[in-house]
Length: 383
Image 1 (cartoon, one colour):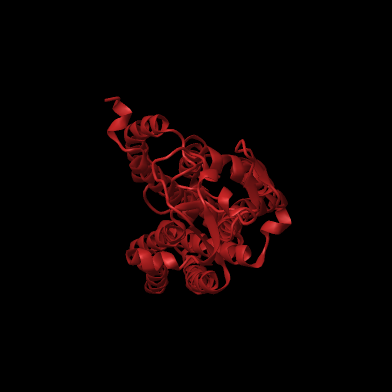
Image 2: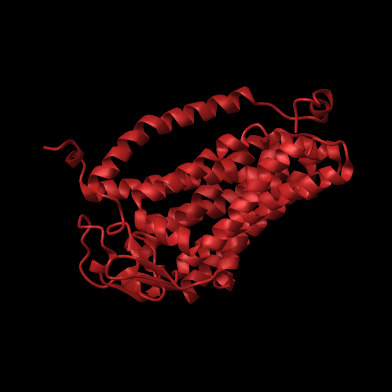
C-alpha cells in the first residue's frame, strides 16, 4: 500500500476543512485583538502616553500573530486551489483594501515615534486605527457574501469566471456580518487591553468592551434570524460522492430552502452559536466585574463560537455560487489530490506544534502589564 493511502481521501478532506477553520480561528484569536486595539485606539487613549501604552501591548506580538493569517492563505492555496482562485480573484479589490490597511499597521508602529511632533504622531495613530478597523469590518463582509453565495461560475475546463464587483459585496446582509466581525474583534481588543494595562486606559477599555460585547450578541442574533428567514441556502440535489475527483461540475446543487436545515440534520452543531452568544455574555460580565483573565477567555470562546457557526452551518459547502449553483465549491469536490493533502497533513503535524510552542514562549516572556512608567522610562525601546 502507498503511504498516503493509509488515510481515506474523504477523511483527509474533512481534516483539512477542520484545519482551515482552526487556522482562521487562530488568526482571529491572536491577530484579532491586535485589530481590536487598533480600532479602539482613538477611544481608549487620548494622550500620547496613553496611546503609547495601548500600542505597546500589541507592538511586540502583532508580527507573530499575523503568521496565522499567512498560514490560512497558504492552506487555502495548497489544500483548496479552486477556493483560492475564486476568492482571491473575485474579492480582489476587497483583498486590496485589507492588505492596504494591514500595510499601514507596521508603518505606523515604526514611524509614529520617529518624530516628537503631535501632528505627526496623531496622523500615524489614525493610520493604526484604519489598520485595525478596515480588516475587522471587511473580513466579516466577505463572510456575509459567502453565506449568500458569490456570483461566479466555472467553465467546462474549470476556469472560474467572476461576475461581481466591489459595490455588490457591500450589500445589507454582508455589512451586517461585517459589523458582527467588527464588534467581536473590538470586544477582543478591549479584553486584551484590560488584561495588559491599568488605570484610565483599562477603565475606558472596560466601558467600550462592554458596549462591543452587547453589540456582538445583538448583531449576531440578528444575523442568525436574517439568515434563517431571508437568505437562501444550498443543498445537494443528487447523490454525493465524498471521495471522487475534484470537479464541482460533477455534482448537482440546488439553491433554495434554508441553511437552518443543517441544524435538523446535525443538532449538535447548535453548540456553536450558543457558545458565540454565551462567550460574549460572559465577557460582558467580566468587563463589569473586573475579571481580566476570565474576560479574555470568554472573548476567545465567543470568537470560537461565531466562526464555527459559519463553517458548521454551511458544511459541506465552502463557497456557493449564486448564479450557477452547480459550480459551488464543497469539501467533497474542490480539494487538492489525496497525496497533496497527506503530505500537507504530515507537515502540519510537525510544524504547527512548533509554532504553538514558540507563540506560548513569546507570550510568557512578554507577560505583564504595560504602564505609563514603562513607556516614559524606556522611550528608546518602545513604539
